Length: 134
Image (cartoon, helix red, strand yellow):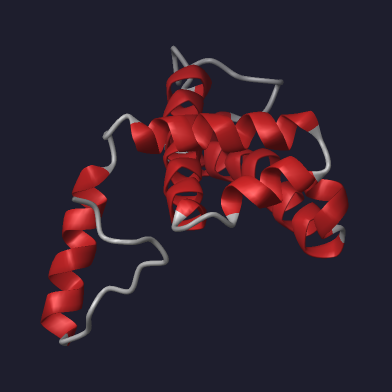
């Protein structure tokens, strides 16, 4: 917990972590869609009628529920109820490092361009916890 909190609370690292984590969530959803889409939609899966298969698998609704249950809801409930227990694991530290590495790679810099445009359109200035770079 201490390693994560000292790293996250330096400068604008919290924003960077959240941006990288959102990219990880999108990557997870993309991989689930690739792995979970049925090869042949005309086959009965788990003995269910074809209309159930088409409603859940053909529309992507089944993958949506799987993503919500596995990737989002359980983590958010854990984090909201037991905050320190949630970050007091090496998996959380690993997630922080991977998220920060994704942000450091420059893959998400287009998001900052959108942030600058929206701030300009709203007439707001962007506040940073870090000193200007030279």
